[in-house]
Length: 173
Image 1 (cartoon, rainbow, N blue to C red):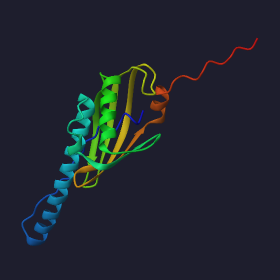
Image 2 (cartoon, rainbow, N blue to C red; image 1 turned 30 degrees about the vertical axis):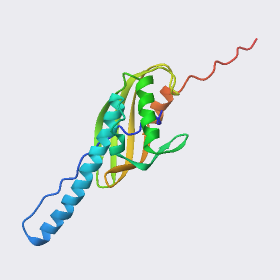
Image 3 (cartoon, rainbow, N blue to C red; image 1 turned 120 degrees about the vertical axis):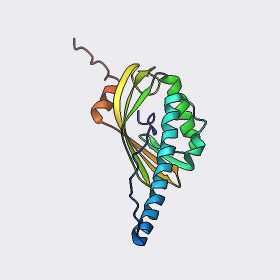
Image 4 (cartoon, rainbow, N blue to C red; image 1 turned 90 degrees about the vertical axis):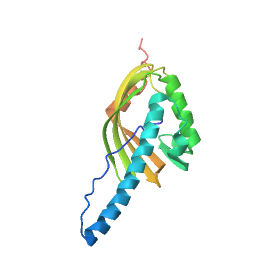
């Protein structure tokens, strides 16, 4: 299921105060630079989140680096085209997917998001057919405002709810 959850992220910028004297002014300038990088990361994260919500991957190239790596449970997947394909497949197999970003934290290198997912699966992406409801922590590393790596984590009890039931035991005669 983590393969579905690329991003769906955003973040909370660090707030830096500016001061009037020269020493604090240079600190403020550095904070402004960091704040600018944070804002770029958050904006890129929101582009990806919106793409999953709408099913429209057309803006992914503006938010994801060409050498982007998605660390999935079945192995690493490289490049924005794989992400675009995932977005299209998620929209097709789970057209009613909703995301609710519960908490976001970002800085000049990472965005961390706690996201609540709900919807209905058609059963083709490794989940049982029917409704789903789970939380995920999404971690994305950025460089120059572009996503370069992604990790997704789902709570084990939620993951178990999405696993197909074990095969029925044979009855003894």
